[in-house]
Length: 172
Image 1 (cartoon, rainbow, N blue to C red):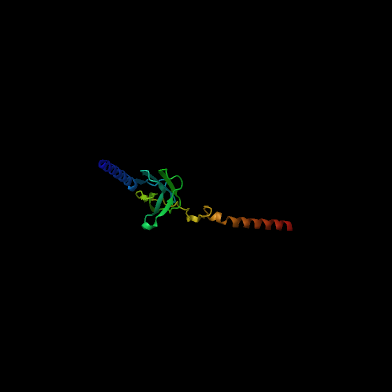
Image 2: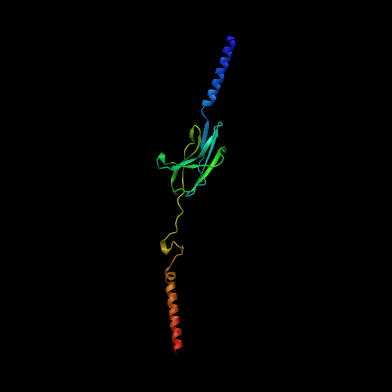
């Protein structure tokens, strides 16, 4: 009888140990941030992927900021939709031209937030504005020279002279 009790207690102890290991086991989550692509002067596409041992993902997205700012200045973009999709991407479209940024993908689980490595990218310089040199007007882009600038005045003068000639001929 004593052997059965010891055997039962050993079995119970093994089962409890297995339960504790499975309940208190650390989540294995890997988050990867891919390099930014399709970078313009005001936008860039961020992509991320995560792998998990079955942990429930409650949120996924990206954290980004201008590179020169402090760590507390990260802005968060939360991805909506099916959190079981391990690959995700987002187009940032309100960026500042010719600015360096850092970004990283993240996922959130019951145990906390897991981040991928930071990536860095730089937006392109803003497109050049039309030159205002040589009399170019920014509203139309038409280059004015001396003749086109005085054309309206010459037209009015010509009309006035024609009217005077007609009036003089009628008076005779």
